[in-house]
Length: 411
Image 1 (tube, one colour):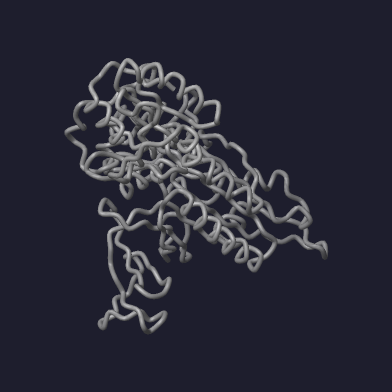
Image 2 (image 1 turned 120 degrees about the vertical axis):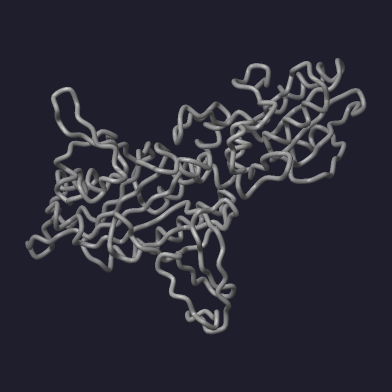
């Protein structure tokens, strides 16, 4: 894509109210735009990143046998009353009335909707387990809608739900999802710690969060420097000697962290029992299903990647989620002709290129390349002759390479 045709362009200055790195760089580089507090538009560059994040997660959810659907965002009060959450979750729900004075809610999650869907279609144990997921917008009454994409009133989320005939089957799948989440976050370039936590407005059971250590984090994480023990501040019990009780050798460390995902083992009580979601077992008896819920914040994942992959010049996107693979820059009239040819050849080779074809100075083009953060910068000018200057975003090293070597490196 030609940068001259990209909407919008970078801003000269970061927003004055930006208190976090993701807010500063994502707005300044043209990835997102704020409509109001906690409400953001993904611009073309930002949406390319979000789509790549979703595709990685989609692949890992498909790999554990889940099927993708899309559920409604507007829900009737009656379905929330079945579990009592119309009242108990009122502080986070957007509740409203339509023109006929019918009470409705905007989706802040989809447990009730999924369970209603399952009970309409489930009959026999032979149909279990069931695992379904979707990508959708969530709406939550967030009092502190700040920090860019880290905390919004509406945001993109992947939520998956599984239904099982027994607790043991749910537990087995729950562990499988933990591994799938770890794999997905690793592919996104995020180092997560699987953290025990409370269930909040979702459940009284112990749940698990996926936390990323980051200065911009609003959570406090306590973890072991030796084993995999990690707990959220809400449930952590301090040890006076600072040693980890799980392994007896490690030391407990605290850090600020960002929650990028969470999973909930509900069992057969909170939702199945209240909503009467059952099935006929192999002996002909009616039994309640066992239910699990698994979420990943897409918008927050994008923000967290920026919070953990940047320098003082801008973003450094991991290759897996970068909006383009290559940022091609032209610095002379001769370079214009060569760049046109190189752009076409790179595109033909299946490489996604952002070509800065604007008539601006080298300093401005380089600054924009650093701010936007595409993994590889290629420069064509009179000085490069028949070669191409190759530089990776996270490195100060530049090399002059032949076209074939450039393609080989990127591939």
